[in-house]
Length: 318
Image 1: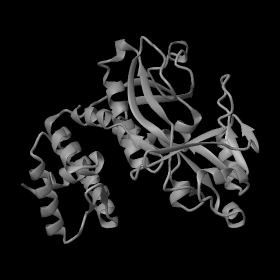
Image 2: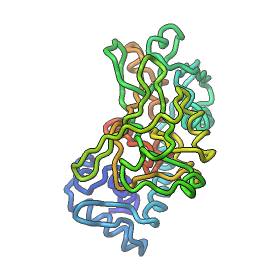
Image 3: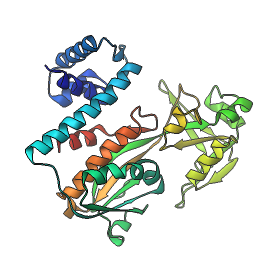
Image 4: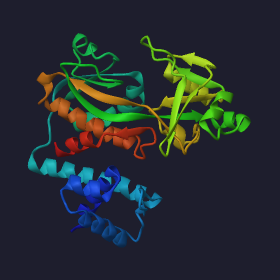
């Protein structure tokens, strides 16, 4: 087995979270995957994974090799496509609808790469939040966070936005870190109120080892502007429970996740919507592939997002 194949298996194991799941996706024996990773570690003289009976986690060196492997595999795929004459030449206009958060943080900063890949294709990005606007706005495809209502549209789940509780280090320097979920009642809590007729989300639910606790936190500040709420918490005035799009705020140290041994219950799915008549559209397929790659690169450690493996695997097959 050559190194390129071992690199592919590394990527699959990292994404699947286990050797067994990766083997299932690759349709090979689990021992073949385990052997390939062991051989790659031997060749590179590095340990790529921390292995326990309950968890498989990349080492720091493994994270670096994973990033490099993805880049190499992407380049090989482009070369194969060019050599076989299958490089897509898309033209016309693609109209994309999405929320401000998805557009500003994830998609639009990476749109230039999509446009370089398809230089004859024009792209229009519109701020839309309601599925009904797909028809009214003449949109080809929409990315939307939230529950899915019955629809005649094609719906593809892309990922889940993970909820956690965050605060700025400056605030925690004075208030201290909570030790239990119940400690949050003593903190200044910033509450998000969904904009369409829903109550403020002031009940925060936590789970650890099968134990679940629900805490009604004080409504120190309530807003339907999630971006504004993030800015306020960054200024060091309180804590918030939120599904964030920007892992850089955490990795850069501007926000700290609280109660790290507890999981915040509740996640918001992100779906792609498009008309059934567009099912076979090369533009839609190309954009979905771009979306899968974009979210994978945006939060590779899945600090704030949990990607949908079924969706990503389907995009790799196209």
